[in-house]
Structure formats: C-alpha cells, structure tokens
Image 1 (cartoon, helix red, strand yellow):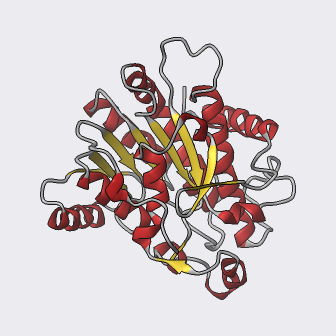
Image 2 (tube, rainbow, N blue to C red):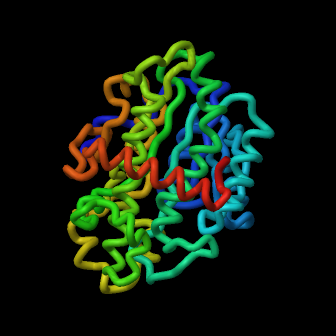
Amino acid sequence: MAPSFHPDSLPDLESRVYVVTGGNTGIGYHTILHLTKHNAKVYLGCRNATKGNEAIADIKTRVPCANVQLLVMDLMNMESVIAAAKEVLSKETKLHGLINSAGIMATPFEMTADGYESQIQTNYLSHWVLTYHLLPLLQKTAATSAKGDVRIVNVSSMGHKQAPSEGINFEDINLKEKFTFSRYAQSKLANVLHAKALDKRFGPQRQNAGNEGEIWVASLHPGNVDTQLNANAAGSIAVPALRCFGVYIKPEQGSFTSLYAAASSDFKAQDSGEYFVPIAQKSKPSKTANNPELAEKLWTWTENEMRSKGFIQ
C-alpha cells in the first residue's frame, strides 16, 4: 500500500494540545508518537496506569523531549471517563485535538456497570461523553485559533457497513441476541454518525457560527491493523467477518489516517464531516452512515440517555 500521506509532513505542533484514547498500544500509541515528534503535548488515555506509564517511557526513548501525560480512563466506567475529562479541563486552557481511538472488537457479550453492552459503551457512548465534556474547551480554543487548528477524529471501521439494517437499534441498543460482530458494527456506525452530528453543530459549514470558531471533524477506517484489537476478538467466530477488511497493515501505518485528519495542513474545511480510509483518502461510508436524520436521532437519543443517567448536565 503506497501511502499518499506520511506523518513526517505534519507541521510543527508546538503549543498544541491533544487527547488520544487507547494510547498505550497499537494505533493510538503511534498516533501519539508522531504527534510528539512534531512537538505537540499529548494526553495518553489508558485504562491501566502501569501500561500507560510503560508506553510513555517507550515513547520517550524514541522522542526524548516528548511531552506526554498519562490520563487514566476506563471506557467501561463512565465515571472514570468523566473524571478524565475533568482532569484535562483542570489542567489545560486550550485543547486542539481529540482523537477517539480506543476500541474493542467482536468481544463476548458483557454488560458494563453503567448498564450497556461493552462494545457500544467502549467504542461509542464513552467517547461521546468524553467529547461532550471537552467540547467547551475545544470551542474556546477554536475561537482564538486559526481555522482548522482544532479537530475531533473518530476512529471507526469499515465494519460499520455490517450494522443492522435499521442502522441503530434504539429499542435494543445492547443487541444481546445478535452476533457479536453485529454489536461491533453498530458501535462503529455510531462513531461515523457522531462525527456527522458534531460537524453539523461545530464544523465550518454550520449556520450562525458567529465568533465561536470552528471545529473540524472526521471519521475513518484505519485499515485492517494487526493490533491488540484483533487479539481480543471473540476467537474463530469473528474470523469470517474480519476477512472482509482485507490485508493487514502495520499499526504505525494504521495511525497515518488519524494523524492526517487530526493535524495535517492538507486536510481542508471541505473535508470536515467526511469519512476516510487508508491512507488519508476520502471515501463514502454506508448509506446508513450518510443518513443525516439518523445522525440527528442518534445524537438526541444519546444526549437524553446520558442526561438521564447523570453523565452530562
């Protein structure tokens, strides 16, 4: 696969601040590595503090001056996610990028303590809540920054095309009786729809923006990356579904499209809200993922659901 973009082309990111979830391994790790190579300050989101600190130490052996901060965050526990957001808000006066990179795939059915199936919470709901809590700081930063300096990236998957025919099953969001990959696909579809809804509200094309600044948004399929995500999939039952992703690429290459969307000067205003595939190529998501009414319905449902649980005000 010949890359059309390489992170070496990123501009100097001195004084910019980013949050990356799932930063201790795979795509998230390499996303952070390249951001720090270009002088960004990065919060490494990770459930396990020991593993997170090990990743930070490893990054600093490669980039000795890397400014990486540990951000403990368990996406299976919404209170942990909210605490992580509050930590960032207490420490920073600006935030230029949020890369929602962490995820699990085709795992056995499991309910979180918050009452949701593990994949829909880890991949979508927790990232929605994290984004919601960080939006005021992102908006504040955008209002005093050059257009395009502030961005949100949702790492989805081409697996979103295997979501239920109705797209999102609002009556049975946990899909307990469905195939494990269907639950994964629904959560990844939600990532794309989330990006569409964010772009409508905060992107460069929104109405009555005033002086609030604009946040550029993208969703993407990183490629079929041979990472811990695949290792944690539910054994052989997921293999047929995984085959549709095509050949494996290295985790570092899997980070390239995220880096392009998060920080490249080649990513333009007209790219906001779009869906990308490797490497840094604009593509069409599924028809369901391109449905603005469904994106709005999912935003409204999620906002009401999270408010009813006390996860947002």
